[in-house]
Length: 430
Image (cartoon, rainbow, N blue to C red; front, top):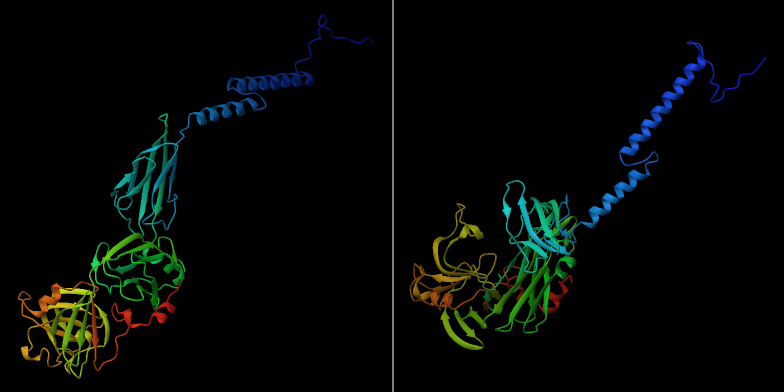
């Protein structure tokens, strides 16, 4: 049988309509057409069948964007989404540019928190301390030297009251105090890592005196030198407790520096045998004042006591310090005691007395443990009580001797001077 050879000049004869080979050819041609169309589509999008062109195009776009990016790099101290952010240390810093705008908003109220950009434009911080346990939103903008902008945002929550501690302290910044004034902290939570807390509080004096801290329990820390502060010295207290862990999961939030001045030296000595008080200033006797101390039934504490508060007039109710009668009422309730100065936490005062007979002063102890000075109702007359009040500072020392009572406890008021120095130092955790 003769073979049929197909050449360009000799085409193959047409196949019958229902022939299977013809269908296969049509399918093959259709598939080839689809592949060709797909290749054209890829080419039209800037790539090729392997995708290599697409990658190159994206890389080029990224490079162009990077080339145009700002050199300004903004850093917010409180990371986005963080809890437990500092209420003192929140800030914004920028390198490679200058800040143009920073907005800090309290999210629950919409309140804008005022802040200040530094003179060189590289930093920002709030003008006020932030609230504990509060959510804030911060938006910062900057530009580099070519005017290209950069932005950074952060939403954060400050440390909660439950997870932080604060120490209230005395004396306050800028005050002038007497030579007996200790630095005293009272913390609102028990401190278990006392070493960590004490090591982040430093107290120094321009006098060069060694200053040592002493713990009374786990919530009170006092600082003092061995002897009274030198008159005229400057005392500086640096509190660096922000972020310091005082107990498990409880951190400090304070970061500040406090300075106060020690005034002239005034120490007044009350002799219960003679019912007289001798006031000495800078080592010289300034005045002698007749007093009426505690009665034999209620004697005044002995020891060195520091004036911690002053009131031109105050109410004294015996029931608040345990002096009650059989009806449960106070043995006394005087609503306008003049020229009162606190000497202890338990209720000992040196104060004016207008209700007692003038004959008791210098002769008899009649009080419930306080030291009384002759005075007048209204606290305006020229009396021994007014003179002593006007001439006393918070931090002045009143020493009581020859009383029938015990020596006052060092932690009853600001009276750590009644503790020997070696014992005081032994109570330090640093």
